[in-house]
Image (tube, rainbow, N blue to C red; front, side):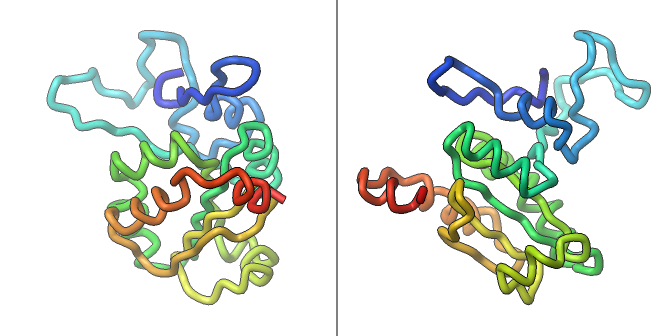
Length: 178
């Protein structure tokens, strides 16, 4: 599956979250759709040794799909909320969400959900979001773990994501997932 592969260990063995996202039709990044091995797309250039890593986050684009995957894989949901007219949202997408460390953190420990404020007004109102970009981390059952507003630098977002991934006591995990 190329850039779609992201293994997560669960009861039935190694499964891929991204493959599940794609199979459910919720990958908002259509450039990552699988294709036959060694068959380049019409716009793809031959690979060269100096080409930088172009991995991207495979964002889920509906809260329902994020919930289903989070419960299936027992992972928290990282929600990125942007607005059409938000300059700092575009900056965060270019400079932060495309950072290799951030991509790795998201791929290994979260279900990524990207929402547009203008198309998801109910979610924005329910979460009381008044500024963009906003990043939320939610439990599988949509309880807020942490949030941040504004264009965070990669090291600050990485710290926020790592703080959520830190080992917790069994009682904290049970409380958090209820």
